[in-house]
Amino acid sequence: MNLNKNNLKALFENAAKPQLFEKSKGTFWIEPYIAKHILHAHLDPETDDASRRPVTILRSAGWISEQIGGGAGRRLLDLGCGPGLYAAEFSRNGFDVTGIDYSSVSINYAKEQAREHGDIISYIHDDYVTSTLPTGFDVVTMIFGDFCTLSYEDRDLLLWKLRKVLNPGGFFILDVFTGAYEKNHRIDNDWYAQINDGFWHPEPHLVLEQSFVYPKHDTFVNQYIILTSESSFKKYNVWHHHYTLESVEEVLIEHKFSVRGSFGDLAGTAFDPKGEWIGL
Image (tube, rainbow, N blue to C red; front, side, top):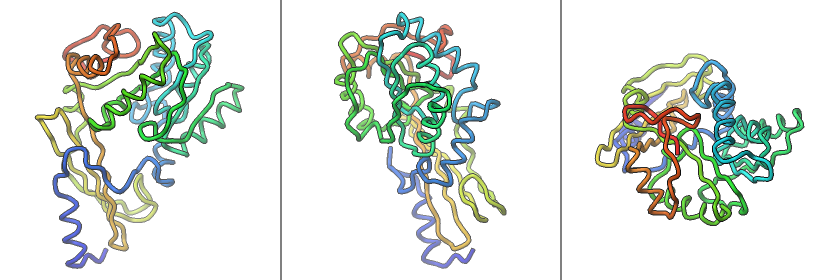
């Protein structure tokens, strides 16, 4: 790597603490090479890195269906559906399912799986924050902390849109992580060299990773800077806004939602103030 004075200066500037919810130019989950690795993580049954384990997904989809009286005759929109793991289970529980996700790699996989298994599911490749969402749904789900990655502006915009997406009396089902989650998921400030192809790049590269905390906003960002052999680099900011039960209920009520139940997850576990997750 031939780092000269100019690109070293640019590197140091990019490694500075970003403004709250500042978006990086790189969006790693839609870049084809990285998206393939993310899909692999989604499908790994031994970890919860990108999706929860299959047994948890199965249990959660069944529990959600029971809580709202079953899926027969009901339309469900799964926001951030990824490769369709939850969407497929909701379909098997009788829902008429639509899934939307920003990753074409994940959506294409979900479509292939639906065709292979005969599941009648509609999949949309789009950004659920900026796109015009379809309407007429009885249930909207947003699972595995997607809600926590949104800036205040994007979160409020989405909640406003969901008021139009949902039928009267419809359900918005989501989970958010707590401050306890932050302690276990902030990365250490570190760097490493990847000689062969790795998660971030197919050629040798250097990874600089660090976390920044915004305690007044209950937010932290995991930042990754990837330097390649051509001395070019990309930066990815991954934002995490955590909630208490009181703070997430306040946001939902402010947007005219009525909180019908709160749990320790979306499988019926009792709420624990010291736990990492809140299901609503």
